[in-house]
Image (cartoon, rainbow, N blue to C red; front, side, top):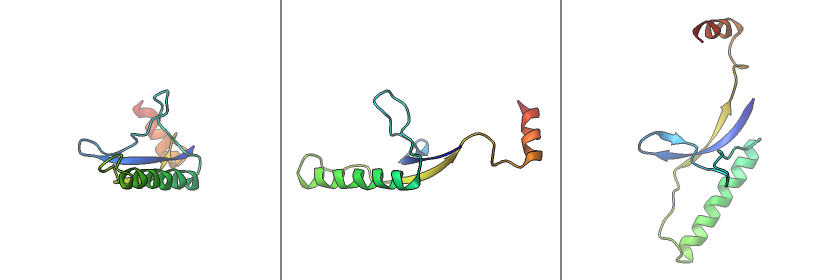
Amino acid sequence: MKHYEIHTYTLADGYVNTWLTVSDQPVTFDTYAQALKALRDYYADGDDAVLGGEICDYERDLKIVEVITGNEHVHPIMREALKCLR
């Protein structure tokens, strides 16, 4: 399965998904367009908060990442080899 995440750059781990739902689950998006809209909204809200004097600055080093789960993208021969490693 494929989904999209917005990753934030961290000094310790590089780019990771730090966006969480209210139930502490990672935020994911079904499409790139949904992730892009969320990222644009985030930047717009952050810019408004800075211009309004609510905050001094906010995290801007983010990127959209396509995440493929499972092993459907792995060649069948490699899939068998991976089974042996488990």
